[in-house]
Image (cartoon, rainbow, N blue to C red; front, side):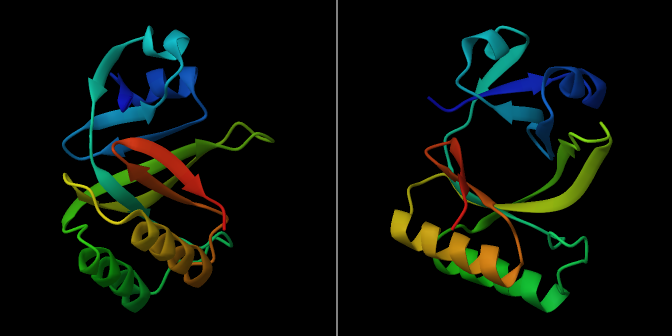
Length: 146
């Protein structure tokens, strides 16, 4: 099931989870299948194929605009032709400090080839110097670790 818990504010999200997304058009959300979490607020269903395109390397350095453009070009080439701007949030375990990163979510409301999606995730993870890449299949969010 592709259920997302939608929060009223960033403060509310941070109280419930150490990581979440604030996406234009959807709001502040967390994908989860946990009934205890889903019971804490408004739940929406989102069904799409998608990949989350990062803007910062794991070192903290920005990804070059030409490489970001290549991520988008490759996403569109496999059918992820819609783009949504978002901010990814995660809390550092050591300090409790909230981190943010601009993200573009390239998506399609219809299925795309899973092997193409995973190949793209590997390209982005390697070229963008990422630990993991978030991707979605039928609205379920996964993390590609390589």
